[in-house]
View (cartoon, rainbow over the protein chains, first blue to last red):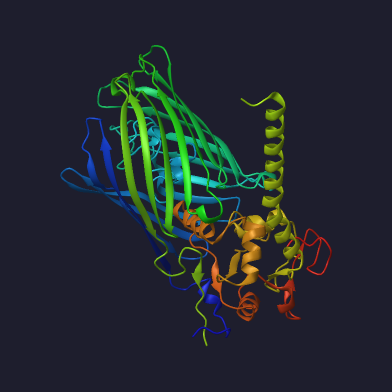
Length: 353
Length: 171
């Protein structure tokens, strides 16, 4: 039995590393007139490992097993070692979710965390449009403008790999480092609101032999409270062939609106989303990849327990200039939070009787 | 077919019905606020060695949300939160977090997922436990009913106000 006895301060400043783990998973049923496999699909199984070496030095790891036609693909999604000097300066090194826009860092592999069945197309699994992962180092922190809640992130790394949907895990493929800078704000007067802008710069060297400078400007706004919940993102991607030629621009955006119902219907959250990706036909990197897209979704999420949700979603979409297609999804997603104890709402204190 | 007057009367009744429904819908809110005014104040207590004596409500919210993790002297903040069903937890979730229990859990899972924090708040199970722990853990902060505050506890002013002052925000 726990009692209010003498607490051990070393529980908070441990002499041994504090290890925590979380799990995310989902299973989806798909019916579609697209020319892709339908039926049941086991989504990603995502494991998180968080190690607190001290109250300032932490490790964050994220590992996935993804169902593929030939088996499971295992991936190190994130592996970050970070030292927090204070709120203004936190230095880290490793593999990250690239801080472009909102969704890529807020939800990414956490299907249960996101309202909808899947991510927007512009940051879908294996996205070629934006580099969703980043290998390198970051400095981040608060800028001291407390009423505005401004945060910055500055990063330098390898940029895209030769397969442009992948980060340069084993080194920079072209010797030209990528860098990224972003600012976001959570104004105290607009509790629940977050908005931000960012820029990413790299040189892209796909196997086709064409090399181009890449600049990605992004902006987002997110109203994170659930009555309503609103997320909108926009990215503009420039490519300038290094061998000369015109700079081309591609654009992608989405807007999602959801609303957590009240009273007896509190467990239900209907949502809609519209999205579009427009690629320049002369873009030397993107044009051959048929990344054009437009679509809309409507669905409802039902949180039948605190840690699991059922989502039903209808999607109408069109890839490049192909015909419109229709799909229906039914998904169960869940999380096993903080296996070290605390149920996601905190960690239990160890108290000596 | 209804006459113009008939439509006008019908529309009037609809408007009246909407107004009545709106008033009825608002009633529970007023009742809840009236009950809230009768609640005990919640005191914010910090480690006695803390140099902080007064804090703005906005800063308090950032600390409880895990957006501010260090005190101005660069010492690490340790957040101690009462376990569910404690009335003071309900006040803090309502007034500081603006969340219910499920949203609170999801919030901290999301914070850990995004690698913004290495762990959620530390859970305590009684006011005595909260007071005892905040007294021995450097940089810690917690909340208790004002009536549970012991003489040697360091209670923070919020926007210059103590729990006994009029206009104190955590009542």
